[in-house]
Amino acid sequence: MTPHPLKNATAAALYIALIVSGIFLGGPLLEPLEEAILLPMMMLGVLVFSVAAMAFLFFAEPVRLLTEGKAQDGMQFFLRTLGVFAFYVVLAIALAFFFSTR
Image (cartoon, rainbow, N blue to C red; front, top):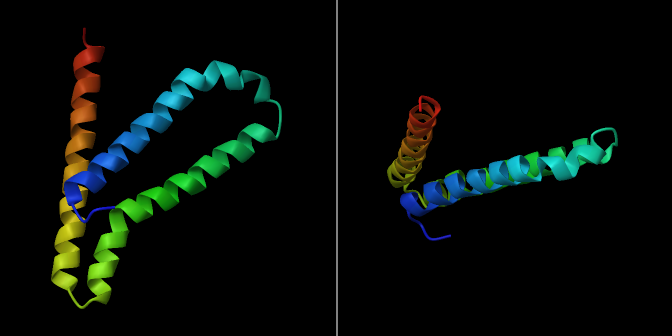
């Protein structure tokens, strides 16, 4: 991953959109598994993978900078990534309100 907060936050937002779309569109395909043990196992697997992916996208570069003695740069990188991601969240909420009132 390139050390650029915009790319990291965008990758995180796209990953979330992909997972939610898969759950939304693939839900009917998973209905037969609701009574089986496989569905909770798959959900837990997706959760663990998602936590690892988000940790990498948000923390890998700041931790690298921190270990190189560039604590200020690491903190700025993290806050910029978090700020861009917050913008995407606010945009998604605004779009949800806009389309729900139509």
